[in-house]
Image (cartoon, rainbow, N blue to C red; front, side):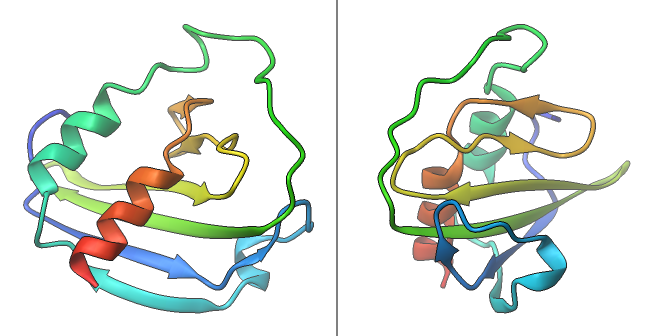
Length: 120
């Protein structure tokens, strides 16, 4: 993940599904898409600081609480191109984040929810 602030960003929030429900991105309808205008600098730094799965392997310890899982997809635009990051907000705080090349077990759903709340 680049550490500099993106030129622009968009956050897609999908409809919530119950935790533990098997779903794919194509099966969950889009609930909202917002231009990220507030906090892009902090967002890029926080995402870049997440530890990679390669550096911190091993199982994550999680509770089994039920509740809503809200999938997010964040697009960050840089001079070199767009970087996509997928993460979910959920009550167990166990879902990590990935962009296809980088993966972390560290919970990033709260960060995505905060971006949605401050820009929506």
